[in-house]
Image (cartoon, rainbow, N blue to C red; front, side, top):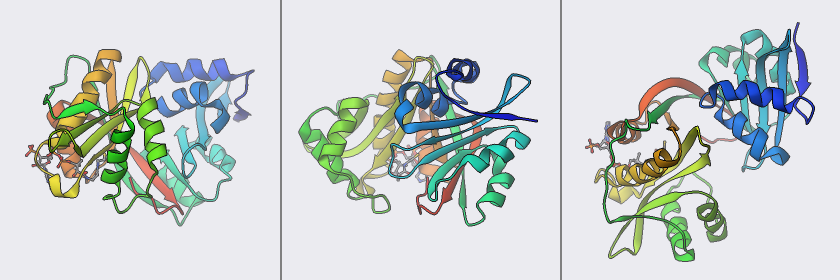
Length: 265
Ligand SMILES: CC(C)(COP(=O)(O)OP(=O)(O)OC[C@H]1O[C@@H](n2cnc3c(N)ncnc32)[C@H](O)[C@@H]1OP(=O)(O)O)[C@@H](O)C(=O)NCCC(=O)NCCS
């Protein structure tokens, strides 16, 4: 029998101590529960005092982001604590049958989970690359991302906040004026940085630009953390090629579960 507890100030430290045992595996929970508590609701299944699984709902994004982890029997009970109607869930392949049963109309995609450790990366350097920081950079980022049809458009203000908070590197051409590729990090912990948002303008692909941008953010990541990690849809071959060139290797798989959002990884 599991005892399901909502995480609050009374049990939080016990949960953090458990997540700390494998920060890479639990990176979203470890980060959200400590640094985004206002936007995070977490339920944990305990058995004989041991953590057997958890479900976490993070609400600061356009759609709630849900993480379901743990043993199958615990996950069966935990999934009942997801009351959102539309969300993206991240879960290991072992829990997919439970998720499919609970959300039969969900669309699922396999994501490779890739990692590179300090000392194992190969960096690609160029003076076309720099960190984004100014309002002009935010405007360039908005312009670049307007070519990304399948994602909702963001405002310059949103991108300005993003580049102020997160390390984001870009590749500029036309005498340092035109941003044509970028990569950033959305979680920075001493144990691991999460890399994401890698994108190249459709007319500038296969020229090595994403490799330069991802290399730059990975270089900063591995100066400050032991590891850098990312998720990539497992049939996104150009992206996987980029990450492998830099030294990322597949360490596992996760399932991206789209419950009525239409978003793909
Ligand atoms: C993935 C993406 C960022 C790559 O950008 P890019 O600037 O073209 O990347 P690069 O030129 O640095 O490297 C691409 C590599 O993929 C290779 N490649 C291209 N198509 C490929 C395919 N179908 N299969 C295998 N490799 C392929 C290229 O040959 C190149 O490798 P090489 O340098 O060894 O020749 C770009 O395609 C993109 O923006 N896609 C949409 C957004 C996206 O999927 N982002 C990744 C999210 S995790």
